[in-house]
Length: 110
Image (cartoon, rainbow, N blue to C red):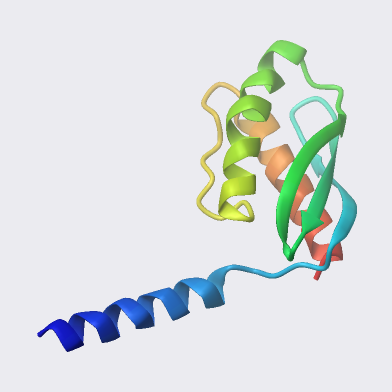
């Protein structure tokens, strides 16, 4: 029984590692469509993983885009991408614009 658990746990770790994308180190910019404007981000990659995401330019309402910046960006860094990151209610289009911009930047880092 214990051997079986160890094998299952090892397989899960291997599968999780295979899903974690590895990117080329550097800084990449990307753009995505928000509600009011194009949103431009910079994604910094270090050690093959996302180290930081910054919103460089946007024409969104500051009050609206603040929530996605504060809540989603740390989650994008933690998850090493946008998969599984939920959009912020009340700021869905701005959230989607940030995620699209991050995906655009990450496409350049492959």
